[in-house]
Length: 378
Ligand SMILES: Cc1cc2nc3c(=O)[nH]c(=O)nc-3n(C[C@H](O)[C@H](O)[C@H](O)COP(=O)(O)O)c2cc1C
Image (spheres, rainbow, N blue to C red):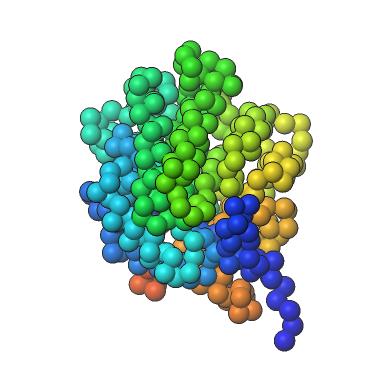
């Protein structure tokens, strides 16, 4: 039998802490809107993860709120109280039971939280600056957090990490991407503070770095075996002012010295080009890899639907490739590559196949009603 061309994707990967993944494909974090109102994981959601955890080396879960003030989505699950540990354990067991490592993505939505999901109906952020909405107009004006509240949220990230450890997860990913609270503190658009949390590029890093420190401290205090800590960031913002590539390089310089196990670059398109803040015309990911200079493993993501797409991405020098939408569309992606059936990988959702794809109802409806998001047949 001829050698599998896609072997690099199937090769195991060892993190610096000795933690080994059975292959180099990761499930990207994807919110599925299916958790119960009280923040517990539903049976529907568990089934969705089980369907996707057999092939990949590691599953990064949907984001989970660490504080009540950070719930960003209806049907989002929680890690903000010890009562939720049994529910978190159920999810960790479901994923690990299929042979993948399980990483919990920990999150606070900040100004992006819908007011109706918050206890007092008031989103919070670094400063009282509304988000610019992609379709035009602005989101609600958030309330600027007090110093004491900021310290409290940092501690919430540490507590959520302790709960992830107690629930049996293999790691946490700090969600510093996609315009949520950590990014809001780093961004000159949403952070106009003049105290220790803002006022200069360096001070805008204070909150994200304090979260990393709190998470690492929780790991040092509570983990009895190697436990991964990753950080996800978005390289640029469209707003002016907003995060530029140059500022992202500063963020990378700061993060790569903190002892993180990996960096995860959040992109819709793996090969996307920079907008501003660099004279270099090469894709963002290549410039980011140059800046990281091999100090920390990097996970790349973004529209890698075929085995060829993923292989080419891996050959750019990222350590691991993550698949989000491709795994919604094709839960058997890795198994098909392993069995030489890469030509049979589905690249569009068949609207008749919800049951076989095991996609929770709310997410299914959102996919069918949002043209251009997840590819749908016809
Ligand atoms: C349904 C859906 C939910 C998502 N939820 C999250 C999330 O909870 N956290 C996160 O960091 N990214 C989230 N993303 C972004 C994905 O992780 C990924 O970066 C993006 O979809 C591009 O990769 P892909 O082309 O492989 O899907 C979500 C994407 C989708 C399609």
